[in-house]
Image (cartoon, rainbow, N blue to C red; front, side):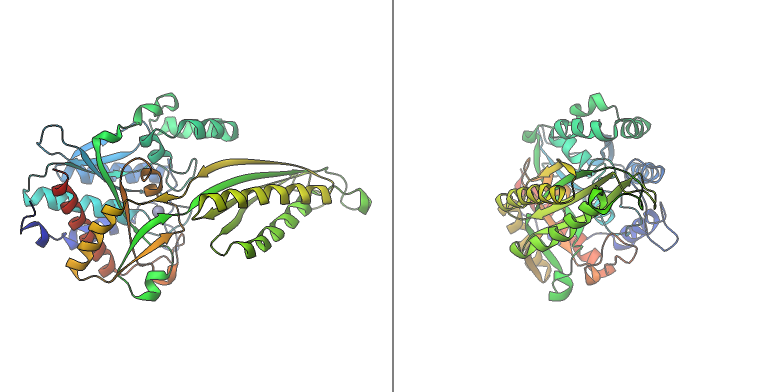
Length: 417
Ligand SMILES: [Zn+2]
């Protein structure tokens, strides 16, 4: 079934690069970074721009009840399944121009080339921009919507920030009580592919062009609330202080010490809110958000248990009470071996240096992997720097990755007959 022509098909590099440059102007920050927080004006502008590119390419524009936005190259084969190619156009605050954007725009370019080639594929090929991958409101909102796993998490989110999140959703035309309609039937899918920058430095250091991800780490996000009493900073006797921030600080430093037991584990506390927030008042409340990651689910669960115990211990030591809530639990995901072998075969055919690796960063492929056979393809990030304006990937590597993606789509599409 493999034809001679498809293995020679390559992307239109100039057109792809032009798209990347144009998109990078939407939400551009003073220091050359990108702020396109999910559902913000900039994110909505990027979507409108993307829909324009899809239409211009003569592809079908499709969206769903969670705001996922797609371009589809339709097959004329009756009952054809859909091969999904995805990533995200949203960013973290002042992030880089490659994270997510490369995957969506490479997918778009692949679809354009396939359309231009005139090949009649037995599957629909769809490039999809997932809503809020980065978690400005709810991490993986779009991919969880598509896989029908959103409901429970969304409910817990409503407790947290109901009004603002809902307002942002409505403004983007997303109705919270309709998001369940975005769920697709996995039987209609032929698989999922994602091209992404590595965001780590393993490929950069080893000199590989392509990383083939075998597994994505599991993640748990905990909200830890220490509660004490706000009294006068100076007149309260030292043994009477119930300082929530002091307890939280103790918790944070002891948390990192626990990592000695988990060489592959990651903890991070990047968000701390203190009330009442006055320099001369003892803090009555400290709310932390802590992230835990590990490639093995059982170890991740153990890490979470130890954090719970540590929080209790710190609270006790400082005369505080503490509440711990898991606001997100995302199990580790395993990518589909047959797809990984296809990507390997393409790398060999294209003469790329490649290696297999584990992803410690979260991706939509993680959500999709439990739903349909999925593969995640990495290209190098210079010095592993990501989520900052200094994020950089050589153009040659981006083009190379897009060509690996195109050839992988072709092989899978032809196999999917
Ligand atoms: Zn990303």
